[in-house]
Figure 1 (cartoon, rainbow, N blue to C red):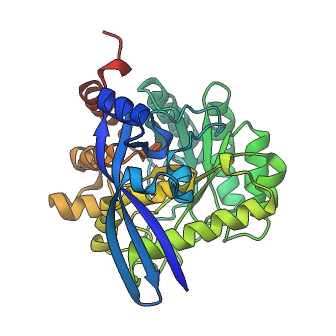
Figure 2: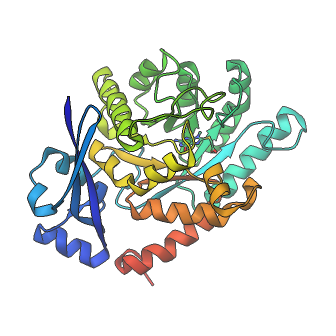
Length: 349
Ligand code: 8Y7
């Protein structure tokens, strides 16, 4: 079957972007008015055959995929997607904090979440099930005990997303005030999760993963990682829409490190802009991941801050609408300078 993809290229920023979009010579990347693309790579895949050609925006401006790339995204948990938003990571797993028992673990996670909000996080992502490579499953009772008190406390004054794959916990989290569900299985893990999203009306992040967390890094395999991840996400979005979840309530995520070699991860980052043609918000999480460790030679995850910020800035340049990060202040600071330099109209001085 022959399929066409469009990957936005030749990015222009700030006032130049707005002038070119107004003139019809460039399109708004992911609907972001200050990031524009003047060209796109048209990719055709027919079985094992892949052909590529580069076209000016004016030659593809009427392509249906161009509409998807350029349309404004809005209505996702009240976030404004004309800029990059920061999702701060709040892990509630025993290995993240001291071993002072559940009570102390809860208190530490809440304090951490409040600190990240203070540093400028737009979203606090609370998770109690480690889905890192090699990790084992956590029981639903254990996961509930870890996350719900933290969700309830943080959701009182902040926009909380809940990192879970379980439908029942999605519903319960909604009851405690969660505003977003972040599912690393893209609603595949639990048959009850689709109905939980439809019935709570919460926006959802659909992340790509190949295989199960425990074994996914053993032998990741793709024909073309970017096109394969794209097709997979497209199918998950289509399934969600059919089930009754509007596109405005969906974000996609290529799932850096989830069943991918470093080569796969780097290829996904290099060609990240292709995912905008899915017509939904784009989230990227690379914070402190193994890829950053390999590229920097830094074996300690907590010391991968600068490398992670470098990757986040690249994803922001490619129009990512949300970045999932541990180091909120460092990322916010980097984006403040980056945004001011490429689009001075965004800052008031
Ligand atoms: C991601 C994620 C993790 C990611 C989204 C880690 C829960 C591994 N990574 N969720 N979760 N995207 N949406 O190193 O990349 O943070 S856990």
